[in-house]
Length: 415
Image (cartoon, one colour):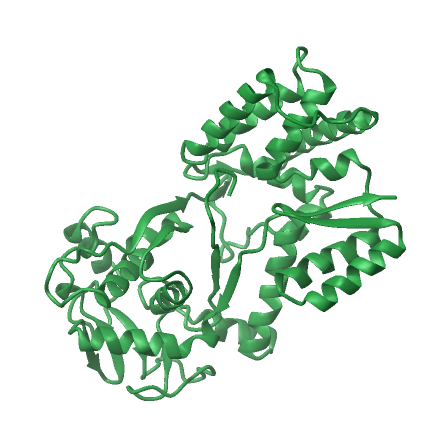
């Protein structure tokens, strides 16, 4: 958006059919949660979705333009499987519909070729219904889970979709047959994203022929956050949550700043000492900005500030090099050559991307009740509840707070 592109951001909520392994084995995560929490799968999905977006808001992450749930797009998944079936890419064994990877010549190109893929999959205990180790399930008509709660009718019997097909069906519905950027973790390269490519391009290409219709132009795979012993994971019991950090006295935006200090393609090791140092720096910056509150920011760029913006944007354009962008950010904040007005102009400009809440710091803080109203209005607008949004704006106005909607979100001023 900063570079002038028209962005449509879609995020999927996987609330059905997600096994603990990408390779169609392991436990069903929903069934495991049902047993642990004594709730229906729909209630579990709703609870964690709401918790996720609450953390997103606390971290000042913009909500996607479209948030789509797998359970609400079963028809689209069935339609895609039928197309794959018509194109000759599938076979059915004991009620399960499989994608035949031998029919897709470019399978595995995302990370090094099919021979390496075969070796990777061979280490996984095989599904007896598969013809090839790399084949994967599109529709489970014969679930291995006796207490599978989420099921739907289909041409292949009552069942539920495989995880991989969900993403492709929703992505193509909202973004068309080709998309520019697909994001995800590095753990999804070898199986999940490789399978997504095969099944999506398989709906566009004739069986057995090389596909010249590329589905994704750019894959952005993020690396993991590590602790001292390796990758954090829920199964190890060391999974980090925002509530954990807040209970230890850390601010969400200080954690955001910590994450921005590492490149998304590089592993980042977490420890509380590093986060404490980041929070100290963030609070120091906040105090400095509060000291500058009596000085107005420059209204536009001059020759000197334009050079900083050019360097900052060049860092972002270089595969989202946020560490380099942050270096320029701190260079401005600590500069002895720039005026306070220039610094405020630049930091506000940079914060359109960095999202550290600097504009709000400069104009003071909201009371807890006021912030809740502002957050509720942001959610109402994201959900297209315009009447509720207007009502919340009026409530804020009664408290002397004027809200303006901008391209980067809500901006408020106190009368």
